[in-house]
Length: 272
Image (cartoon, helix red, strand yellow):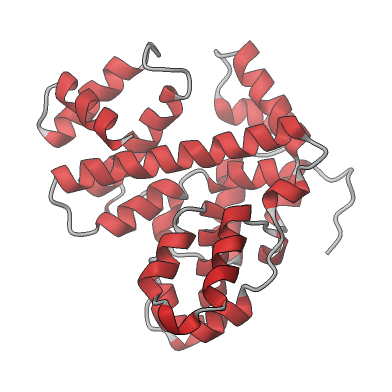
């Protein structure tokens, strides 16, 4: 469905179709490689490919929800589970010739830099979340990894769909740090990214674990805090290890992990 450019960016994001999502070139290349060797690959290896690309994760989870959702008693929570249910051959049929992110930004280097930075931050959050979860001996390490990886997926989609608006939002955040994120988003996008995320979770039938709470039955529990702190630290680390908010981040994480702040900092460094 074509949406007129005059429609606010937030509304354009909210009606985005999954088929419009590009993937990293490395993802498409890896899928093509294993499609020619389908008898040598399993769901675990394909899940590893998907988990390197948050956009591919979104496509995978939405695909299994759309094709199998009505037959499942509970939503599929992880990419690995989605691949097991989908099957190897159907996976290759569904994800052949995907659009490539880098090609889409061939004439927009600033946009490409922005979207790749968002992908890098998502991976940093996921690795930190895993380090925290392993330290806590959490049983749902994969789920927490994925929840942190996709926590900011509406902003990642913003870079893909409206890179100029994403650049303007980033500029406003730098120039007016006292402005709340939601107010900056309303000013530039005509709505909030968190609201866009909730709409897409429902429209695409994505698992509720992607709404940033990890375990939605206890959004203030340790698993949810694990994800939120990992994402928060990854955001602050974008500006380097001297970001003024990091000591408080490490203090809060220390309460969760039963570690001193210096121990949390060491754990994060090793994760990255």
